[in-house]
Length: 157
Image (tube, rainbow, N blue to C red; front, side, top):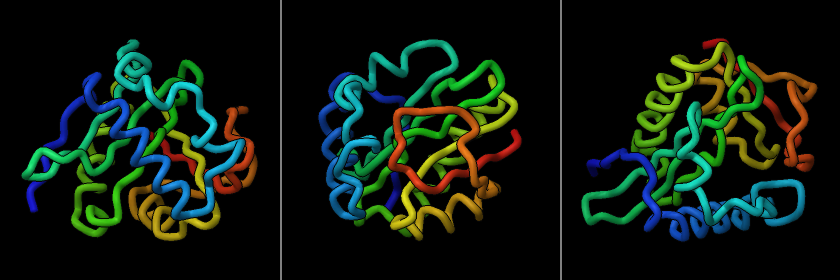
């Protein structure tokens, strides 16, 4: 299947929120300290409109949004790969790699390093991050509101 990767639009906000919530339920992350409790989940088109930020969605051939990812600023030099989630039907199709490539290209134009936080239960995601050049770090690089995320990665850009 071919996927269209595009910047998020207002019409996508609720769809992406629902995808993120369903993935968090799937992997046991539906609680405080994860994206589950993020008050901005339904406002991505506004949040990611700021300079140095962007969120992309992947749309299948029927126009259905199947996932997305974003880049957000943490410090002047460090960004965060944020809210990278895909529906199960889109995993293993190569679309995650395309999203990652676009996100990291954007990040490299604005930052020196890219950080991310995930859950120990998301083993497939961890393998994907490592394949994408991230290396595991054992202490938070910066403090985020995702205190329940117990696995962290960093990549030089």
